[in-house]
Amino acid sequence: MLLIKKIETEDVERISQLEKEGFSDPWSVAGIRESLEQTYTILLGAWLSETLVGYVICYCVSDEAEIARIAVGRSFRRQGVATMLLEELKDICLKRQSEKILLDVRKSNEAAAGFYEKCGFTRDGIRKNYYREPTEDAVLMSFQFGK
Image (cartoon, rainbow, N blue to C red):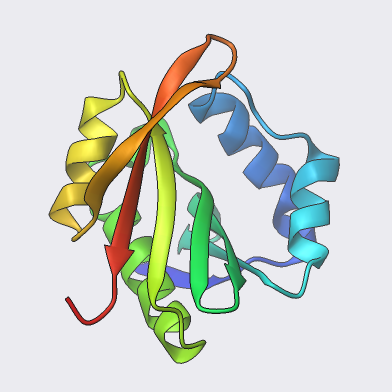
């Protein structure tokens, strides 16, 4: 059974492994740890038994939240893990009185953009040459609470 819960310091190494598995520009252990230590960060993990299979890192400031990272291990994709992470994140953001959640996705990652749209996000614009390794445009997306 999948369990969504807050990430703790001892989980940072596993997040780093998932970062390397899922991103061409993975965050360092120090960067992940720094995010975890910020009071405005929401960092949730998806656990299957004792195994961390996915996570989301979100910054929640004032009435806005921004998803910085979301990833699911390769062998656990397309099983509802990311959907469960997003639903739990939405609940927390709503309790913190966020009005919207922002994110960006690589323009070439149409599967991710489509997933976010199924979860209620809309495409808001393009940020030119935003990503590195490789250089690519970002699609800006948002989820509005109450819509």
